[in-house]
Length: 175
Image (cartoon, rainbow, N blue to C red; front, side):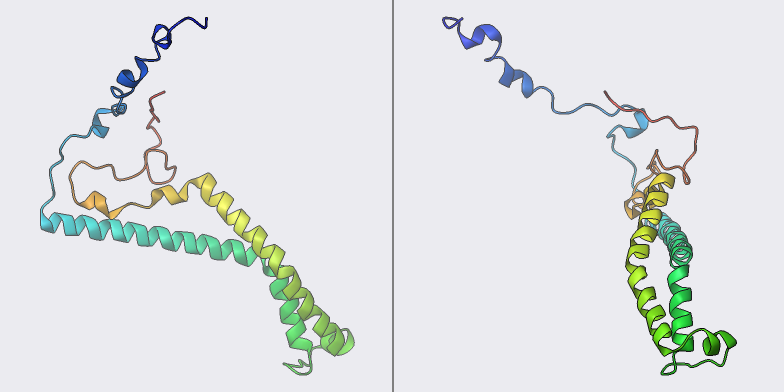
């Protein structure tokens, strides 16, 4: 084996073959890198406004979803801090029955401190719930780049997005 040349094993042929495979062609005809027809300025502006509107609506959907999740998860903290501030004599000093009979200044201070201490872990839980829900629903794939407004024939959404695309599409890839 020590007397054999490296060319016998095909080591000299490798650099020539590696230059031949520059990249695989797209799988579908719509994904081919053919020159596309540019849109007229008015049409481009209309598409850009449409895409910006869609993206703004999706942002508002994300914001609403985040507000709902954070409100539900942080509800214990909100309640505890509210009752702590409501019954403390230096803050609001409510005349409610539970403030007079159950909560004094020391217990109100303890409620305020407890509320702020449990806020940190609950914020982490709320963010984890939001991120897992956004990933499961693939909400981030629905945002559209404004570059789609420049040329005709571009796809309007990512093929794997669950909410904004047709569900009948199959995912195709080179293997």
